[in-house]
Length: 304
Image (cartoon, rainbow, N blue to C red):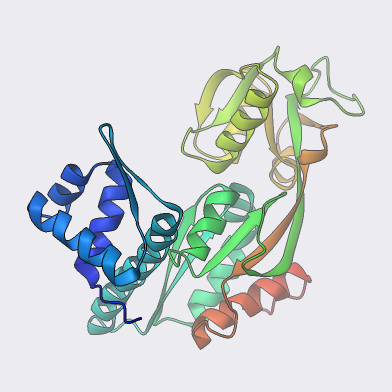
């Protein structure tokens, strides 16, 4: 059966799904409600299946509708990427790589890799964003990101993955603190203490908030800061304790009066992975970045 739909149909379905409303979806698509209704009716007839459940409270997606909207988001995202890439070609940029990464890889491991990559590729831009691992997987799956770096137990079955780094989250305390020298501690046992945390938009903040929510106990955030170094300095000054990546804590412990206490929780040890939809489908300049990430994972990053 031939299927007929266009970009207006795709955007309309996405807007209806986001708003759970035919009326609001039509408004967001800048078309009238009768025109939107006609488009959805024609689309359903063309596909041979219902896309929406219609009730007095609004509309919701049927299973085929959910699948349609998922594909529509991918197509529209790719079009936006195409538009952006074409604009950059006009400005002399030959390529654009979108990388989504978790907090630790972004702050601790990626800077030297990206420095080498950008020096080798002066006509390529990198769009680097910090996200939670499950959001990274979704972004790569939907085409919003070319390459993702994820950590911990996250489902990546639909993606190609390569091993990257291993790191663990640890408790950082001031030297001389009651916990200084303790062999390990459960995250739950730290929740009675004042914490120094990263800002709310950071992936590590959201990850620890999820961990505390599962314990049905809040984190006592005494102060929030913007990076690992500031967090360690606040901890050194006695503002509170903090849960940070061991790589960052160990580096700053060389010059600050802080101590590291391993967390006993299994989730504190995190394997990182590089993920992409298809390595072979990536442009050559993006494949080169993956190769540098692999070299970094194996401790053989080439000299600059």
